[in-house]
Image (cartoon, rainbow, N blue to C red; front, side, top):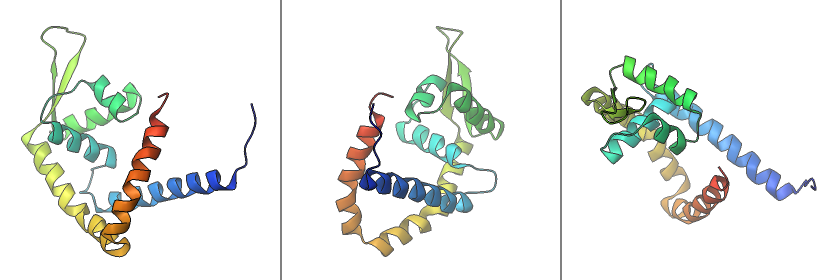
Length: 147
């Protein structure tokens, strides 16, 4: 195995890592008290699909361990944002669905973080963002390989 010190690759991953950290920090500051980005993303997914998912499906989707997803779901359930029910056909499995309170919390969080998104579009320009999206999607596709 060869070790690469390609400055282009290093610069790319450094920028991605820093942008992710800064974006997460900026968004987290705007989220309602007690809500974390992991909570918001799970609620957004459940709201978008409009159907129940298993904890294992959610863990795979978000590329986290089952334990990490169980922790997130436990906090969301304690807040009343999701309902967890047993699978009537397989008692070992559970299903997770978003509650009306979860939809309201997700909507409130979306309103709270909207100025961050709007500010980025204004600062960078919609055309630059549209141009960058295909590259970012291709990069994500490459990073998802072998996961």
